[in-house]
Length: 217
Image 1 (cartoon, rainbow, N blue to C red):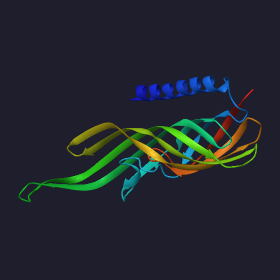
Image 2 (image 1 turned 180 degrees about the horizontal axis):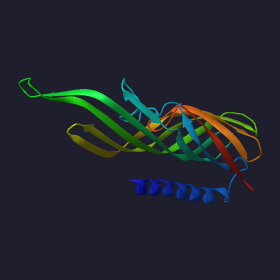
Image 3 (image 1 turned 120 degrees about the horizontal axis):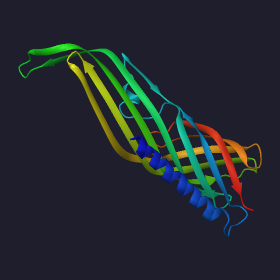
Image 4 (image 1 turned 45 degrees about the horizontal axis):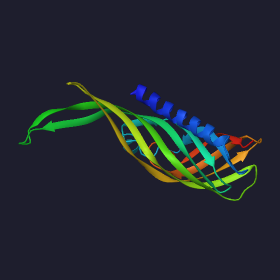
């Protein structure tokens, strides 16, 4: 699946570059600008299938900080539209879990303990529409809505005394939600940004990173 992930991110980057070049230097008003941002997400992973909601007794797991890139074209001081791509990984391990198998008559066929190892990779691709509140040249608060798709790659291996049983799956989903954030520019073009919100797998409760603003000439 790694080749698919590479193709997805290549398409996103090419699309963003084409969009930027087509709108950045054409006919524009003084308020227009393009903002690129990259950062990491924290807050639990929010719903990695088979991972986030299964950290039960005898289970241990990890959910990595998510990686997020965004692009926005701001048409006026208030409105902008753009896109985002995000990726997160999670893993789950369960050891010494007891199990028992019975036949239709209730007779015990087999019992023992098992080990369950699961891994998931979650990619989000979405459009974002943002409304910017009145701020200043250095301080830019905003809210917005997000709509797009998720791509999930999930694999697991259950091991018992009878052998190992691997499984894998790949499926898409809907990514929809809202976000609130702010950008604080330390120079004319470079700033830090932070967001809170929810839009499904693989997004996080909070994101933080670096933003780059390309204004009109």
